[in-house]
Length: 113
Image 1 (tube, rainbow, N blue to C red):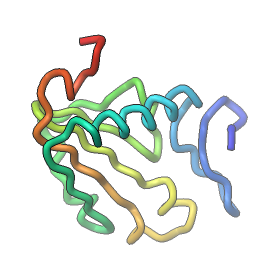
Image 2 (image 1 turned 30 degrees about the vertical axis):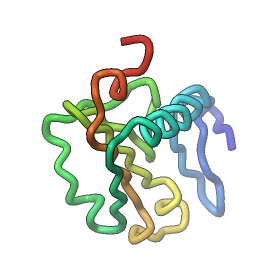
Image 3 (image 1 turned 120 degrees about the vertical axis):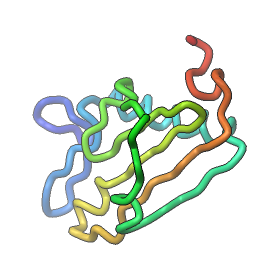
Image 4 (image 1 turned 120 degrees about the horizontal axis):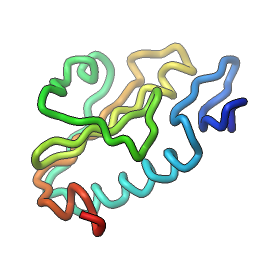
């Protein structure tokens, strides 16, 4: 759904904004496709393991305008953290993160770098 201030999110009994703009959500979908194709390895973690991810040395990816769902860029990896569905279902065990590793500069930044 689209929220009152243009946020993109989920509504299932309660409202959870995933991205502050629809454009941010589109960027996140495009980034997921790009990272999946370019990464040498991917790993998915769920539940409490998401909270244990060390994001030191990672920078948020501002283009995704993340709120409940966020992206982080490191030296050779991207991390997508998805908390929105878990939040809307009140099920923290359902939060997930995908770690895309082994990315070169093009894999981290795309054509505009």
